[in-house]
Amino acid sequence: MNPIQYQFLPENFENSDPNKFRLEDLKSEEMIISLGPQHPSTHGVLRLEVISDGEWIKEVVPHLGYLHRCFEKHAEALPFNQIIPYVDRLDYMAAMNSEHAYVMAVEKMLDLTGKLPKRIEYIRVLVAELNRIASHFVAIGTYGLDIGAYTPFLWLMRDREDIQRLLEWLSGARMLYNYVWVGGLFYDLPLGFEEKVQELVPVIKNTIKEVKQLVEDNSIFIKRTANVGVLPLNSAINYGCTGPVLRGSGLPFDLRRIDAYSVYPELDFDIPVGEGAMGMVGDCWDRNHVRIRECEESLRIIEQCIVALLGDEKRTREFDPQALVPKKIRPKAMDAYVRAENPKGELGFYIRTDGRSDIPQRLKVRACSFHHLSVLPYLAKGTYLADLVAIIGSLDLVMGEVDR
Image (cartoon, rainbow, N blue to C red):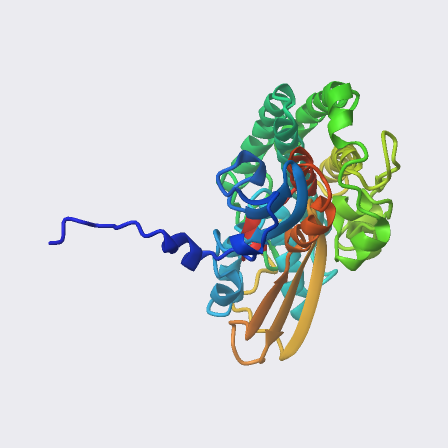
């Protein structure tokens, strides 16, 4: 047996992930910096090829391919119901929201849209909004870490842990739930779940209030984020941005209102947008502010869902969350596209079926983080290296749905 298991060759890295720019193409003052994937600000597995002149950024080239899960090819070899656990792993910070979007797509193909019991729909919205808050708490908390604020991260992770425990109690899983099923739910809410959520709501409200005082009104945070990474509205639209990134640029575009799916039309909530309160509309401060405000609106939605689930849609012995779950999912031959408002933006599923199989012929994901990553070179050009870290964090990227 050869005792040398691995031999380093200088060209290995260049062959596996070649740079766009070569050293001989650079001017004498310029240099290539590889930012990530180990750098904390890249939030996992993103590598940025940065061309800089001192601390002044000339070009940024995102490199993907570190987290490839072959989701779309896996989905074309699995029955519809077995795809849900793979959907969880796209945006693993908001698995409930992703499940909801995928399940609505399949239910549209089965002509089940609008035919499910209201209790199922209210439970889906309840868990989706809980997961939205948990996802935003990660975005806001880690953004504080990027900028240099440690305390808000600890406070938000503490409350996020309470949400995670509730969802684990509900589904048996901590992050990847497989709870929202085609035609229904894995199980009804556990006894006492609604009361536990009611107890948690004021705690989260108080934490959000404290974080706003500690972060948004902090002069250092304002200097690091206001007037930095300004994304004009027309550019946000042209790049396909959605969610808080688009709303941070001033457009109140929210699919919960636009498409009016599930029971969202019956609920009262506002759509926060960037207003340039500390700088220019569409800057990093605005995008972070929109996420904080969305947590407050999600709490309003949760409170209304709890009222419904303890009132008109309360649990009964006859309620079966799996009553409409089909044993075999075999839609007619068709193409369908359904989208939903995830914490990071529009998550859409395009599905093609042949009418003979319970396995989709084609499944394509419209991932919001992919579009938001594409706008990074535009935002970063002409900024400082320290501002690049602030810009990346303000986009709230998750690489699971970028390199899917």
